[in-house]
Length: 81
Image (cartoon, rainbow, N blue to C red):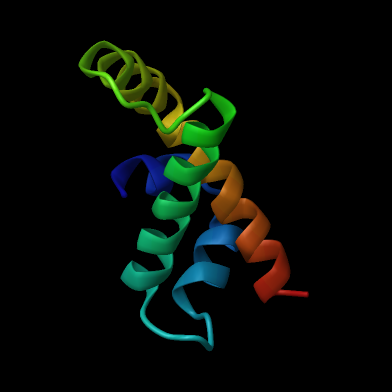
């Protein structure tokens, strides 16, 4: 969440915080879940071995912050349209 605060423009933050659909933390949780799903799919997941899981975990962990910021920006555009 701290990464989102640092990377999102003020307009995007306001759009997320004053959304008419519920609590902002739930919306951020949805953005994070969407990011995880997107990255798992993009990296060939799900996986069924310990080695595959470790590799996928590292790929998702490395890309998750930037992916969630991109998703949050898209959500903000929808909410403020």
